[in-house]
Image (cartoon, rainbow, N blue to C red; front, side, top):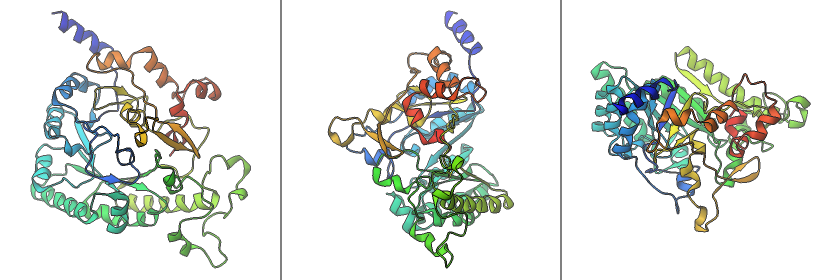
Length: 399
């Protein structure tokens, strides 16, 4: 009786969330050149969420309509992934996860279709095998496309629309020229949405120049052919010093370079719209004055592989528990040319407390209030109270 009353009281204070993201594994079968899993591999701890721990989540599924089974790993490596999807679907939830596509065998594809998985995200870093395979090492572009074609064929045979395919393209300077071919690929495999994201967690300083929002003074070699005969970019000004003074802080890539990326992205968005495909992109400019977090920390949360409740994957303690290079020092990331230690934020663990209690903690509520767009608090004060890892995060700056 006491436990029943306790559960009812917990429901009274439960939040309504846009989604709950569940990290089902930190293991991965790929070696992407930009990923912490690769760059910190000497000390990285591969873990799978146990089915017992996942069962503890079930009372909290009523908080949301969407459960996304994703973290710093490949979800299909967790042997319980299909059971996890089934548990969520039996409770009327929309379910999705993002995969590198290498483990999408015909049997697994048919199981996902049978389970009526709602969203299957697929990671890309190029629209040719040479580019994609170079960046996302350990994966194979041709195999990935073959698997997506197979999924499309099986869905057609079953006369079903689920799972809906979303293509997640990581934009870098060295692969941006291939992004224009993402729409034909989306049409071919029946994708309904394309998300073009940025390299926002930079663990290897050599990759800093690959982020399209980091100004290098010139565009990548693949774009030089697009210059006119007088050497100017076809869009905008060629020098960041020519930017209006009030906009320099916002346009980190320089006006010409920024306009080049923005115009190309808008061209793709308009073409996608004509095909009834959503094309979502972030940036390419950064906004230093922004207090908005693209990770939706006010209306969503991440439950990591250990059961900890964290604001987003970038504050996931699994990142900072790994020591870089085996020297005992904290692993770092690069932000605007400076190094900062990877820092985790955890407000509790579902193995010890309910999600309702964790969500309603004073510390967690105060954290979310820092990102309230309607706050009357001065920006300087908000930034002074915000965790440093959030202040020094490109997600806060609009990319």
